[in-house]
Structures are given as C-alpha cells and as structure tokens.
Length: 445
Image 1 (cartoon, helix red, strand yellow):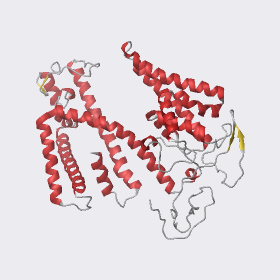
Image 2 (cartoon, one colour):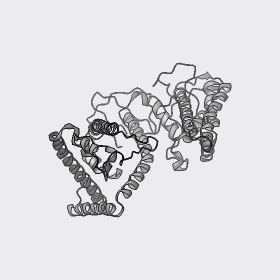
Image 3 (cartoon, helix red, strand yellow):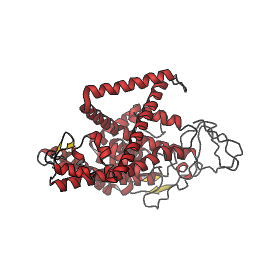
Image 4 (spheres, one colour):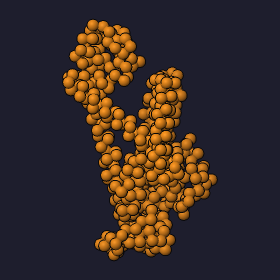
C-alpha cells in the first residue's frame, strides 16, 4: 500500500509547495482522524460500559473479553428482553455486535432521524473511500506496468481495477475473517520497520531542505566522520570523511558496540569528563545494558521482569543520548536531541560506534568546560591552530569538514539574496556571503 500512496501523492502534489503537501496530506487527515476517533470512540466506550452496568455483567479484564450470552446476545443480535430494551433507545453492547454493525451502532444515540442521516453520509464516505483508493491503486499499477508513462492507457487501468477487486473477493471467500486477521497482523508487523525508515527519511529531508536554504547554523557546523548506515555499503561510502578509518576498524568498533557498549562509550567520556569519570560513565552504561538482557532471561522466574528490563533499556538509551548531545556540542556537530534519542534507541550499536570513532580520530573543536553556543562561528582554514587543554590530552581545535560541492551548485541567486560561491572542489561555509545578482536560484539537485 505504501508505494501506491507514495506515488499517487507525489503525482497529485506536483507543483505544490512542501507546506501545502504537509497540511493537506498529513496534518488535515491526522486532525480529522483524531476528532473522529475521539468522538465516535468515546461513544462506543460509553455504550459498552452502560450495557455492562445495566445488564450486570462484568468483563474479563485479564483476557479482554466478555460473556455475550450473559449480556443477552446471540449471533451479534440482542435476544433478551433487557438487551432489546437497551437497543430500542440506541444502546448496544458493542463488544457483542458484529464487526460490520458497530460503525452504525455508535450513531444511534444521536436520535433516529439524525442516525439515519449520519448512516447515509457514512455509507457515501465509505463508498468514495473505496472507489478513490481503488482508482489510485489502479493508476499506480497502470503507471508501473506501462513503463512509467504519465498518462497510461485507461483500458489497462480498468483491467487492474477488476483484477484487484477479484483478488479481494477471492481473499474474502477463501479465508473470510481469519484471512483478514492474518493480513492485518502481517501489515502491522511489516509496518514497524517501515516506520523506522520513515523517521530516517523525515530527518534526511529536513536536513536537505535546511542545507538548500542556506541555514546559517547548519552551514557553520560539521558532521560525524562516519554515518550510521555505512555498514550497508561495506563501510566504504562514496564520499568518505578524510579522517574516517578503514573498514576493518569500523567493523571491529561495531562488533564491540553490540556486545560491550561501555567500551564504545569510554573514549568519548574520557575526553569529555576525564579518565576517572570516563570509567564511571562506561560502567553505568554497561550496567543498564546488561540488566536489560538479564531481566529478559529470568522471565521464567518472574513474568514481570521484562517490563523492568525495557525500562532499564530506555535508561540506557537516555544515558547514551546525553553523552551524544554533549559530544556534538564539543565537536561542533550539527543535530538535535530527539534525533540522538531515536538513533540510540533503534540503532544503538551504530550510534555508539559512530561516537567512539569520532572521539578517537577527530580532534575536539570546543573544550567541554567552555560555554557552548549552537552554530558558533568557527575560524577559517587560514587561521593559526590553537590548542586547548582537556582532561586527558592536548587537542588542536578541529576544522569543520565540509563535503565537496560540485562547481555551479549555487549558480545564481535572486537579486539581493545572499549567495555562496564554491571554491575549487570545496565550499567553505564560513567565508563571507556576498550578494549575487541574478534571476533564478539554480539547484541541480
């Protein structure tokens, strides 16, 4: 479903601003869905609780079920006198009703006349939802099968619409509700890793937009010498940092981070807080990490142990996040705290390995005892080197690594708008930005 929606949204959003797409395709549906689920969901909960109290039946809270026979329901319909009397005034035991009836049951408390009107509107809305969803899915199938044509044949789209409908009918006839339950479970399981990918994509898009709009804070800072996804390229990315170590060192660091996170944290804490406190922080990180694993092993003795274990894992992630934020400040690395937390939570080995390599191979920019100012101006490459004393060793102030920018990246800018002129093979973001006269802002990316 995701490729369908992605390609369809991209097609209908062409020519619109990013703000328009976010408001129309994300914010508006989310706000509507929030109020829709809150209002109708609250009515459903109220109806269920009212039925339980009126009929004197208590649900099984541990199993999440209720005895529908005791509630006076058979086959999803009220059969007892008490249940029928409640149904006459628009109150149903939602948990005992058929799945297809619940949508209309929660509209009954609004009164019979209003309920009929709302049911008609709901039916029209559901019909339009399925028709437009089928049309968009068929359009994407048609586009892909037609080799990417912008206007694929309509006959072929009709073919795909009938094929999708036949597939849905076969699924319903062959498996019924059980097949749908299995399909829901698979979609939810498959959606979890995709959610992680979406978080990474959102962060990447946000950074790309800030870079293209010449964000002064971002252009005055640097990045880690390695990336968390470098393992997918065999630790040999296409644009390696000049101070990044080789694949063997990267692989060893990653393996150590998986099993011994305290080992990876120590080089960072040793430079930030000194050798003694570095050991203390490394031990604390290790304790939280290993207790998380141990409490999952002892689940046989105590079934609630994993809950405590996951709490300690969040503590481990939070601890690593605080260290990572402090490292970014002292190494003048661009980023933000929420990004640090999620990367430590989802990809902790890659995050810790990245932090370790940065501490070992890249000099510190700002000493930890100085006040940090985000986006502070750094000295240019021509300025003399200055030494700062840390708790463990004397470091030279690091120069920001700026990724090479192709010639003509900023070819022209609107009149009066600051522009940047790339140096041969390298662009220094700290050079004064001179206004450039032109008629268009060219960006080949």
